[in-house]
Amino acid sequence: MSFTEYRGVDRISGPFLLLSGIPGVGYDEIVDVLSPGGEQRKGRVVLVDRDSTLVQVFSGTEGLAPSSTSVRFTGKELEISLSPSILGRTFSGLGEPRDGCGPVLGGIKRPVSGAAINPMAREYPRDFISTGISSIDVLLTLIRGQKLPIFSGNGLPHNRLAVQIADQSKLVGAGNFAVVFAGIGIKHDDAAYFQRNLSGDGQGGHLTLFLNLADDPVIERIATPRFALTAAEYLAFDLGMHVLVIMTDMTSYCEALRELSVARDEVPSRKGYPSYLYSDLASLYERAGVLRKGQGSVTQIPILTMPNDDITHPIPDLTGFITEGQIVLSRDLEARGVYPPVEILPSLSRLMKDGIGKGYTREDHPNLAGQLFASYSRVNEVRSLAGVVGEDELSPADRASLAFGDDFERAFLNQEADESREIGQSLDMGWDLLAKLPVQELTRLSSEEIERFIKRKKASKAG
Image (cartoon, rainbow, N blue to C red):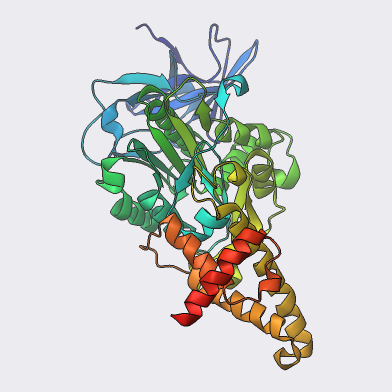
């Protein structure tokens, strides 16, 4: 293949090289940047107009001089090598092997830019994915093909939760399940934690890990989720697998996007983020889904840390618009020793209703989930009332609600980091908790379910 090489650039600014008078250059084209000492760096074309070309260098421009720097245009986009052997492997944020097992051989090369799935080609998501976590499986159910983000905060155990979901998730009735895990801008100790717990035989060897470290060049953070999603699409739509993609931390991705936008002198929008933040995030999130004529699927769990725990910040705000719900982690629950500290009331899964019940989980799941939501919502009202009048002045029903709330958080929400609960076990735990409430409080259950509930309550007391 022929390359076009130019010696000398007009200007170097931050991670950017400006060249003029370069014909036939394409947007997103990959370039090799050569220093006089023979060092080679990768970059990509980020802006093209009639007179100039702007190149973004992945590893930065430190040590480069405009007059002596050469730029070689390859005519190719950023690509990843793919084959079934990527399962069980660990890669850098740019798709380079980090596990010492050598390059990916005998496969195909595919551009990582990708595209959102055509809405006309989508199948509606319906199948239940079990995470083994009661709060998610029963109340915030993850559906195959869904994008369900986790909203966390600095210091909360989202990394531990991410590893637990990656390790024990499964699509009931399907053996061809895989996980692609992308760490974006993560610290070295977090990277070691992920490698220790996820690489090698994670998911029975059906897990691929991409790690972009905090001290890697900022531009690499822009590419990491695209490499991970391209690998996931290959496993799903070429090999027919059902792939769960976990990406953490999307806040690092957005911060990198803002930093590069400032370096390009673009007009900032809310809190300094570029005006195209929404469409850029959508270009990633909308790569999840189920193809109507395909055999595989891509499900996404993006994880982001909310700056200052502000859920109205542009990153969680825009993510919530694009995705189908959110799982919110609570600092208060975490301080009380509850793991995972999932704050149920502001969390939701918009596709949950179509992937639970008869034929998916269990027939009693929808009404049980609704009753648990309603009963726990009342707990917060009673706690506020108790803070004013004191617990001694509460009615018996209010005291029962307080006891239910404590048991709900201690037994249902709380579980060990290596504990995986089957959906039937989690549903039964929900019924056992409701058995401590008066029957008149069960406003979300049908008469038949209340009859079964009363029988269960009597059997529990007899036992």
